[in-house]
Image (cartoon, rainbow over all chains, first blue to last red; front, top):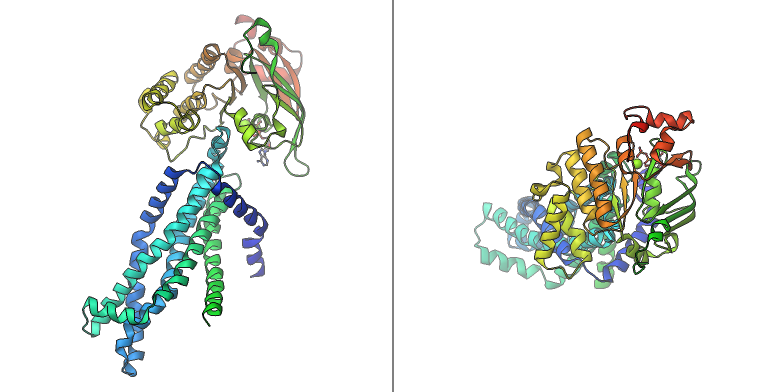
Length: 253
Length: 265
Ligand SMILES: Nc1ncnc2c1ncn2[C@@H]1O[C@H](COP(=O)(O)OP(=O)(O)OP(=O)(O)O)[C@@H](O)[C@H]1O
Ligand SMILES: [Mg+2]
């Protein structure tokens, strides 16, 4: 386990430098708008169906599984609210981020890794185009923006999944269901949950880019870059989640 | 540098001057151990050497892709090992680099591969001018109809030629060719060699050509240098080296080429 941790994170120092370079390059002009928009579109497009389906299933499953417990106390009307709170606060952000770690982080790792190996990044550099700005900054920014949006989308689909699950045994129309949800979910619930997804997105983009950009020579390293990007990104999502829960707990009590 | 008047003596001023270049990868893997190369303006220099002798590393040092350990690299009268990113980019814009494996951008079509450097560095071109430059660049390499293909749809030789078109699109003053003809059939190889010569005539470029293809070396090279054990082992014209007494030098020339004394350049 220790060796595993070390192998995943032994390059903490260079990750820090890489992150520092991101902030330096991100503020400097020119910003690559076209590439940024293309990446946003690609990120959203690639993950939207998967994220939606997972959100729906999470809502459905949580509702079906929680019903017996609540029914025993005759508190079935609490079901929509309870499910929605756990969906919005924890389940959907983390599951969405994990899916994106698998889909986006590995995609970036493989893409930049193969560009590195086939000297496309060098080719940019010799044509006086800053590959860090063009490839890395745009991808990290796109992930940082799109993961929160995907999460919010998935929140709605998840709650709708809950509605479908609720209707298996009970009768409630959509507007009544949502009003039940809104009695439990406050705007305050949304804020920390959404803030942390920006960090998830940043980590997903950063780790994918780092692994790809620093890939060694040879085609095998493309696979390694993609694979280790998923592992490191998923792991850092849990770490961020852990920190976020401590922080919100500390701030709200 | 850019404003000097054209004179006859200009061809004798070194535009590239490398002195005592050292580079090692890791502790005991020294590749370059004091390489000295000068290239005069308008000259075609051919670099020969065994696989793994550090030819690619040498020209990568010349554009700052590989950091040098020691030594001086003077290009256009500027010491490039001391420059920051921005100053280095000014130099890089004047140098074209053809990669050994073409290094085409996979995610872009042939057109976009050429537009990408062009649009960034010549911002005041109109759409028509960009279109025209790209058509012209592709016609030069004989691949005008590949314009909307993706790199994955091209053969190795086509990729090489598109890479060449991309390298030349910014009209560089110096072109560094890393094995421009390797892996191509003799006819295409010859076409590329002739293209290199035509470009040199037309744009008055200076070139460094790495090659294993002796036909290409014979056609394009004004002067040849051979890299061995991290230093320049010997240099001279094709005829001189082909008739060298040195067995090792001779072994470069024996294989597939007609004897040098039957050819005139
Ligand atoms: N980035 C790198 N890291 C470690 N070693 C490297 C690196 N680049 C090159 N080398 C080593 O330097 C040596 C010279 O490589 P180089 O690519 O310059 O050879 P070459 O002369 O161009 O050969 P070829 O004709 O096969 O292209 C090789 O042994 C290679 O392993
Ligand atoms: Mg080489």
